[in-house]
Image (cartoon, rainbow, N blue to C red; front, side):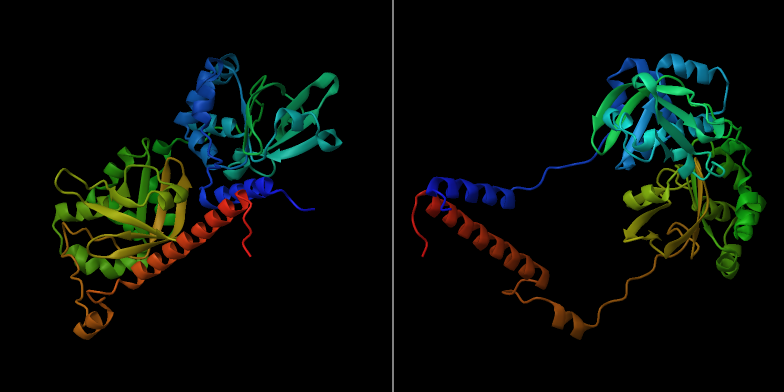
Length: 392
């Protein structure tokens, strides 16, 4: 079938626009903003923020949040659980799958198990971090934690906001009962940082924290969030001659330089490249370093050395301890490494002439020129077809 010139031109114009205009599709969501529009869920929203669950939810691309109203949250808070236990309980209400209202009422075989963020934390033993969802008689949908003996302690109330198949925020009637989620866990101030580090191959660093008195500063920051970069025993032992040459104050500053007063998960560390202040930062004494990411590799660059993050020893928010392959040396205590000058011949051979652009610029210019010619041809095609003029 032969298309009319007008229709052909319209199709060509549509093609042109789809090629030239950037895509604006996005899957970003913000659970705090969604719930802020509904005052009945203000307490639930507040605890998602203070437990840092909101940030975890926003990073997921497929998620279901089972919110409870303020009255149901009051029942949970009356148990006087620690903040870290409350986090586990609320994690049980965040599913790692999409369940909108329609899907809840069309569950295959009438019942299904779904994993939750509580299961993903590793805190849930066995399958206790799973939730049973069952389509019940009379149009109701029940929810029950697997470790609750099969009892469906909560039911679906309504959909709050849905963005298929990105995020679904629904209301459930009650907090899900789970003995495992409500099991008491120690807060960060009850954790023994040096003991944890010693058990994970950082005993030498832990011993220095204790002998220098720097341990107290690290412990004071546990409640508010703490990231520690720990050189392994073998790395630190070879560094000890340099360490012994420092003054007592210098030794403390060096150790504090390996701590950051903010909890930085590996995902956050990879996304927040740039300068980072440390526990040793004091006014004009910057004591900072630069975080750089290349693929999955994370490095910490001072003006003296560059160290790589080689593993995670402890990650119990708000505390995370990473292992690094070098001792971080601040320029405030050690001489900055001088950049080696490039050989003259190499510099002359690689330097672009006054009339010739650099290779990267030339490639970019060629690419831009090619896109420009392609776009111009498309425009000519559109105009020609629109006016009914043959191109042959």
